[in-house]
Amino acid sequence: MNISSPGIAAVLSLILPGLGQIYNGHFWRAIFWLIITPGFWIGSGGFLGWICHLIASYTAYQKAKEKQLLELDGNVPD
Image 1: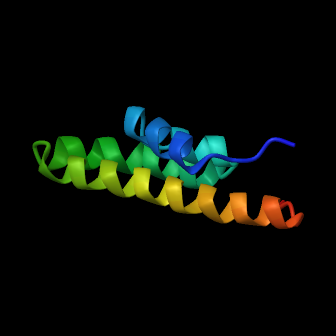
Image 2: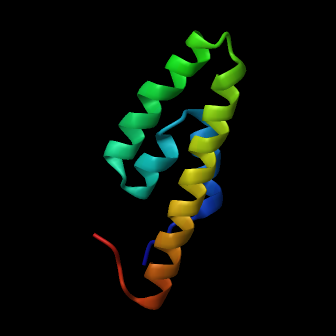
């Protein structure tokens, strides 16, 4: 059984926003972060980019944690 790791998801999204979401299997969410985060980096001169980057990492962590709990209960999500 391959159980998702919230820590890995968070670190992947810190490396590249959206990568943690791909790890979790949420491809549309990953595309969102891959497009939005660079836009905020460029549009705000970097200030909002950091915030967006951290939010992407946090959401990847939260979704991996939810997925992990479902996997441990035996209810594998689609």
